[in-house]
Length: 373
Image 1 (tube, rainbow, N blue to C red):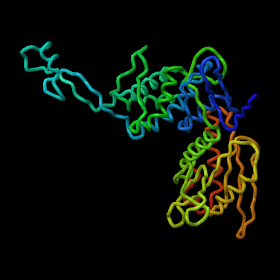
Image 2: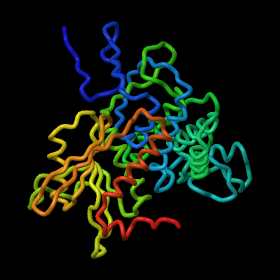
Image 3: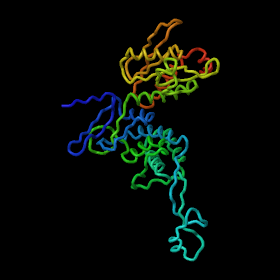
Image 4: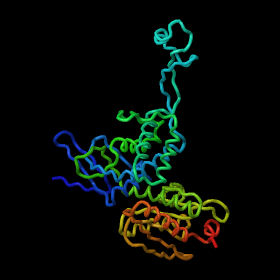
């Protein structure tokens, strides 16, 4: 008899073929709608499996899927809609492309114009954009959607002007992964989910079938915290947030890479930006000594007096480490991932304000907003 351990994986897949196939489900510790919200900050962590698995339809999860979809769409459209070449048949007064002689003779015998032509058009009306627009229009019909999400979806629809809407009941547009559409690939997976199955929860049931998916929760948590907290810090103290910064090393000679989940840069007294806040995400509840050693190394190497560990459970505290010229404070913060989306967003904002309070006086005087009298 074989034993399986989930370790850090979450998801559902179907293994094997025929009568011997089995369905493997690993449930997350947080509610699925919260999970979909986190995945909006880390869509690249999804690993999709073409083998379908059973799932239970959950119409109340569509707003949560919208959070994930909007986040991924924003990144996909950051440099504008994807464009591609499409072969087009048309009737024109001038020659464009090549003349379709047989159609010209049959439709306009003895006439010089109009001309039946075929040409390659560089257009936004490509399968990837049709799939994206179809998902946008589908989500806009969801009742009770957050007004900010709805406004952003309408903005996406405006960006996709010139794309032919998907006809009701028509098959989903077919696209092929390539280097050109690489930035679209994460959001297209969510778009197909929205158009094909609305929303779902990974649980036993016989209502709908969806593609299997697997991801590592600790990676999703790290990506979510790095991006969401980075955005909140920029809003709170300015500067530049660098999630998963990989530009610093423990020793000279670029050896022993430091891998914090978030470094936040602010201008120092010389005006040059340098690391001011270091954060590491820990998808666990227990406070391990190795975490302290890791954060202590970050602080020593980066010249910081405060380091911040953000856990998914437990109790907050501070560990003070004596050093030659004073002390280094290692802060343990706790973020409850089971909170509703807006409250989780509020907690992120409050965490950013707490981290700002630990900044050295020179940073705080230069960057923090003055209180309103």
